[in-house]
Structures are given as structure tokens and as C-alpha cells.
Amino acid sequence: MKKAVLGRSVLLAVVLAWSAPLVAQTTTPLAKMDIAGVRIGMTEAEVVKAIQAFDPGAKMTSRSVAYFPYFDGVNDLKTPEFLDQMGFRTADAGIGVWFAGPPSEPRVLAVVRRVGPTQPPSAEQMLSALTAKHGPFNVRSVPRPGGGAVVHWDEEGKAQCTVVKERSGQRVPSTNAMGTLLPPNAVKVLEQYARQDVFREALGASRDVSKCGTVLRYEWGSEPVRSFEAWLVDQGGMVTANRRSVQWVEQLKAEAVRKLQSQGKTPKL
Image (cartoon, rainbow, N blue to C red):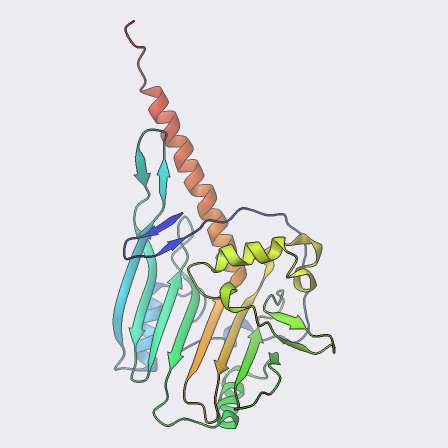
């Protein structure tokens, strides 16, 4: 379990089997995916630089660190603290950025942006701006009363774990996607869904969610668009980093147990 010094925790997931997934055809190059200039794989310094370039008036509102606890049989121990999450505030939005934990390098795995435009665009303007920036979308939700929409861009060459096929054969954004996108529990939900065969179409029989790709998801609920939310999440990267963390903490625990046992003394009887 990861413990956040500022109130965050994440359950560490169990490693599952490997198998090649089925990959869909409509995809987007990872290089065309970003939120407010922040891309998957950026360092902390690169994130700050990107957001300042996007909005020179942006302010950092939080910088959270975390650690992993473990137990040697006698003592409660913990890893060194590491960068977990950063928060920013721009003129009309809040931005959250999450990083991989050790032993992986602290690089971006997820970005969330929530916006309340001061001059709400129409849905048509919104979609036009998005496609101009990111290219044609992969899937979008079926039109609904009030003008709301969910629109997805999915990483090329990777499994699309937030896309489902309706009975009509039409591919649409999954209505169950939110739990697989939002830190800190996304990895736990991804692994659970895999065990339940939720991703069979995307992953085949392997159930290996480390093969899920990066998804860029926009959602709004009205016409005009009075507010919208955006997620950029490397789902497979989150799972891989989490599995590495599990293994690393287990190694630290084993070393601590061996050290404790080596210091034991035969009691005088």
C-alpha cells in the first residue's frame, strides 16, 4: 500500500499473465496527446515549464509526496518519500498531474483538467478545436439530449481499454471508464475489471492490463459547454509502474527480514 504524506494512498496490484492483445485500428500518435502542454512521460521540471508556457499566470497549488510502508515482522518501515502528485490553477481551470512511483523514474502517468470557460463554446466549436489540435477522434458517445458528449483519442499500437462495442456494433467510450482513469485507485480497478473479463475485446484472453494504451478523454454535459473535464492517462504505464513498485517493496521487505534475523541472539536459558 502506498501512503501519501498529504493524504493519498494506492493499493498495490497483483501481477497477472502476459499475452499479446488485439489492437483496434483507429488510433492517435502519442505525440499528439497532451493536456495544457503536459504529456505522458514528462519530468516534474518539464511539467512546470509546459504549464507556464500554456498559461504564464498559472500557479502551483500542491505538491504531494508519498511512501510505501512495509513490515519486517517487528518494525514498521517505509521507503524514502517520492513525488506523487502536483496541482495547478489557471485562470479558468484546475489541473492535476500524477507521477510513477519508485523504482520507476518519477514521470507523468496521468493528467486531469477541469475547466469552466468564461465564454462557453458551443459543442461544435469544442469538437472543432479538439480535432484541430489532436486530429480525428477515435470514438464518441451517442448524441444525447442537452448536447453532452464524451470523446476519445486512443494511442496507436496499443489496446483500447476504455472503448466498448454496443449490440449494434458501434464502438463508443465505455460508461465504466472513470474508475480506470482517476488516480489513486485506477490500477486496482483495471486489475479487477481484467479478472472479470471486462477487457476481453481489447486484450483477448490474456487479461494483461499492462497492454492497455494511453487514452485522451474529453467530456462535457451541456450545450453550450459551460464546463468540461479532460483526462490523459497511460493506463498500461500505471499498471507496469505499480507492478514494479510491488516487486521493489517485496524485495525491501525480504532484505529487512534477513537483516533482522541475522541480528538475532540465542537467549540465555
